[in-house]
Image (cartoon, rainbow, N blue to C red; front, side, top):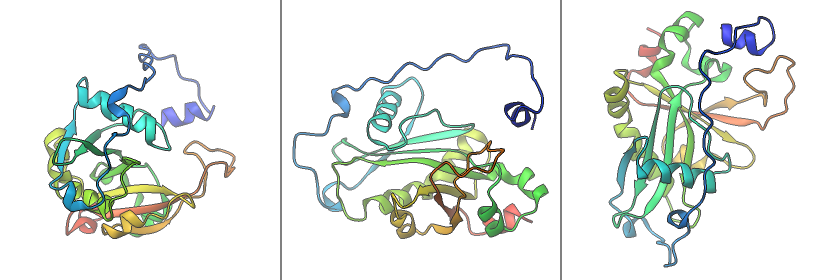
Amino acid sequence: MRRSTHRDGIIELPPPSRVPPVAKPITFGPDTEPPLFPAPKTLEEIRPLEIRIVRGGTREDRLWNEFVARYHYLDHTRLVGAQMRYAIHDRTGWSVAMLGFSTAAWQLAPGDSFIGWTHEQREKNLPLVIDNPRFLIMPWLTVPNLGSHILSLVRRRQPEDWTARYAITPVLCETFVEVPRYSGGVYQASGWIRVGTTLGRGRYDRYKQADKPKKDIWLCPLGKDWKGTLNP
């Protein structure tokens, strides 16, 4: 709360004792160039897919950042709070997709209404909800059902992976799809549920000026009793 009121100019906080390091600009190398050979056209040509957890300071980390910065329409930004990234490779080792997960939005009216929790329950159980702010399929791939197939594979292992890293088992995942740029069909095909649309305002907007793109809100249960867990 203190941080948000400081950003809004309500209170003044002392300067931070440690200035975070400035991120180095991402440069694009040959590893993220489109392949020269014909791209596969069917799932059968690339399965089974290999899902790798991306760890900081590794070659996979560098490639994840570079692919997302180069090809994702939102560019590359540091994920907020707790986070987990995945790199998806085809059966020959070529990069197919990149996914990023992080902590959920603090307050979201359509999502809160769908979940049905109280303010107190949200404060207590928000760590059980995670966000999917980045999902990139390599732009040279036009494989039918590839996106929904990847989302389904990751969803099945997500709770276990997150628990192993943070000792917290998420039960719900959210994502935001900018409209009308995208339809969200890949999420719908993977069993996600559209619960509403944002108002087009930033997180710290004090003046209620809708100056950002509106986004559809999609939710995906990660467990059978997710609603009972979030609002017992």
